[in-house]
Length: 173
Image (tube, rainbow, N blue to C red):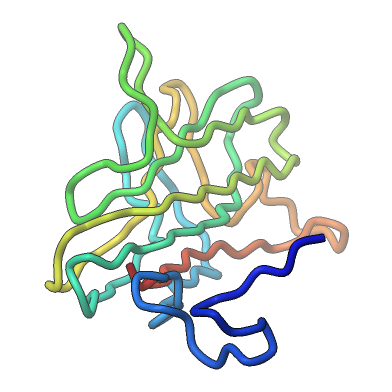
């Protein structure tokens, strides 16, 4: 096996990475939602998951992660989720015909089920101004969509309460 050297040093002698090697996490910001919300259908609506971050350099990237707990008032309806940077949708598929582009999609299987969805995206905002990231839901029309609650919302010991979160990490270039 060949020995890899960095700046002509053995691996154990390396104390810092050479110039041009990025990837250090500079800051981490979290948005957390443990209350429920009702979302209307047929357009992108805020879920309540939001955070603000101010990049320290315009060449840095923002790594986004979100986990969203969903519910619906009726079974067999779709729910699409997407990240937004301020008012711009990011990290989603392109719209195609009448199909709205989203990053993640779930389907309400039944009103006592837990359709959860995760989103991940590496954004390059090219900015040092404060940025607001949000997760928005595009729900199929015909039902009421919920964040952090079941559709039937029954008060039973085996029916849990859920929480959702969004995390942004600034990563050096």
